[in-house]
Length: 193
Image 1 (cartoon, rainbow, N blue to C red):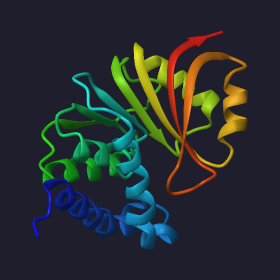
Image 2: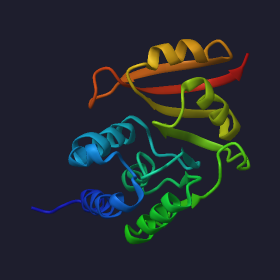
Image 3: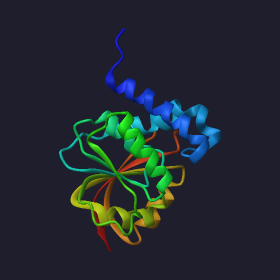
């Protein structure tokens, strides 16, 4: 049986996360046993929902590379940029990009709100900030015709209602396959009200 290049890279990525996590806390220690079944599976469902594009994919607050590095592995034809302000996490991301031979990916180590607008075709974020705050980040870095893919937990409907007080946007909610109460929000047409 042959193992695909994607599967090999995902396994190598999981190994790197396990190796670095005790020193940097890339994911909650209590969830390391669920790395493949929860964290990586969660990011892979986003990779399957979205389509690769020629334009930049920007992952905000990349942390341990979830979903950014998984997207880079699943979409090797798309340029992927990881935006992470923590220097130690950015060092992990750069090391993973090098070890996984992801030449189409890079890292910016800066705060989201001070980084120059990235004009991204797609933006992703997972466990970063409440949606009202996240919308300002997305608006700063997304092309007008771009799509935001925001991975939200159990309170996503409340967060959407709060965000709509200051923002107008079109949205399609995709139920998470790893948590029935969570969703991946596909957001377009973002405008400040």
